[in-house]
Length: 214
Image 1: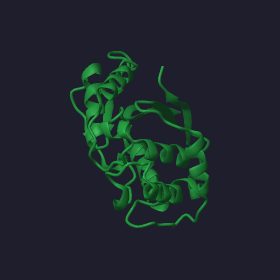
Image 2 (image 1 turned 90 degrees about the vertical axis):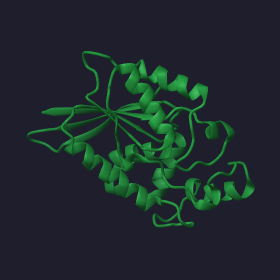
Image 3 (image 1 turned 180 degrees about the vertical axis):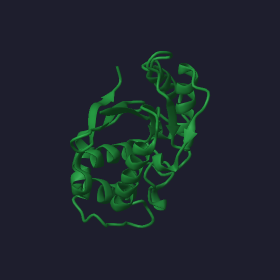
Image 4 (image 1 turned 180 degrees about the horizontal axis):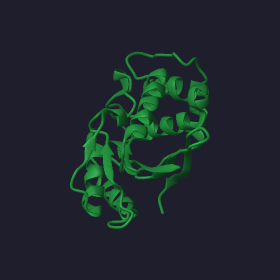
């Protein structure tokens, strides 16, 4: 039997988060966001038991979060993967305030309603796209040789990772939206997951900790 531990970390608070603006790849951390990232970094051991690799989304906010963690725990190298980026928002809402009536209508339609898996409002990454990327990420993790991995990612995609990990191909858009609504992940929150390979039974994913901020 072999066990991998994956520490998924959501990035710290961003300037645009604080203003309620829908983001694309841009978005630097606030001072509070940097403090959140540092507090999360303190959770990881610096010597014995230290994670073997740190992999992050290449977006500004995740790069900054990963750099703070890496510096604090003494990791000199960060890898970046597009598999960890946030879901692409519809172009119509990027850079706009989330409380805007038109923006709320779009978000409610794609995030909060029960709808067909293949619903696509415009040019966003829809449920099927996101589910397929989560599947690819889990395969990527399985193929990594390291047994303790930090992955710095984003809120919506982190929920998709865990939802797919839990339900696999049975996951539907409506089920994902329900899981997403009832399981928030805070800025710099940690989700700890394991992947266990067995000799005589099916290999398994487990969610061990969700939204840990202590």
